[in-house]
Image (tube, rainbow, N blue to C red; front, side):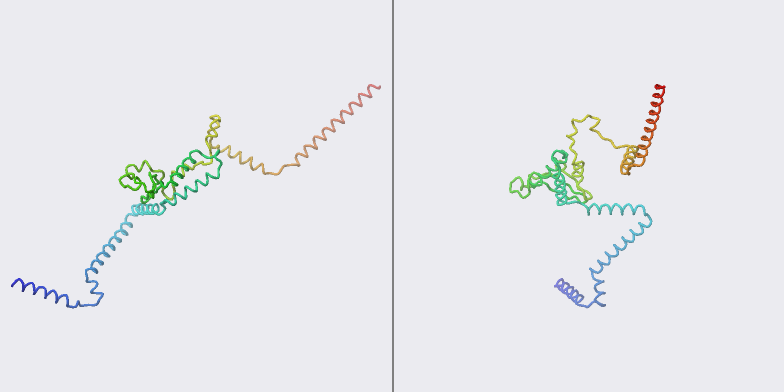
Length: 261
């Protein structure tokens, strides 16, 4: 009975304390509540952290600049990370560029790489995996929409340790680097130059003197022709020929007079 009385008295006291009004306005009651105390503590922690960041940046500007550059570069890489739609758009663009060329002048490496990627895309086996700041394009064994048991069973999926063997391209800073490297000189078919001599197969950049000479000759080719000098030379030649003919005629006349005498 004594324990029951103690329990009853405790419950009554708690009920009276809960029913008693809290002094102050509603805003003061909210600040003194558990939620208000937690929010004030969180705001104080963030305020203190921001103050420490500002003070540390002012005291160590080089370190702060390095951290800011790393954070900005990471955000830029994340923002410019290409996705699967970008990869397919780039692939179709490269395929269109090769389609405008004759098969005889296409680069074999570029054409073969684009054709293989196009085949995987048509089969639904070309996928892109996002890794935060970069993306990986890889090939799968089956189309995920296929109803085959091998395609739907999770135990037969590609393990992560074999992913590096299936990677086809790397997307970073808005570009697909492997595809862009394969498309270098896509309009040059190296097989056409196999029968040429070795010294003609390799090309080198011209020297500074050769470039200056070529530019000078190109500029001179656009200059007007000097017709006056050619006319003067022609008139001089004609005059010299007339004088020579007159001298020859005079010598011939003298010889005839001597013969007659």
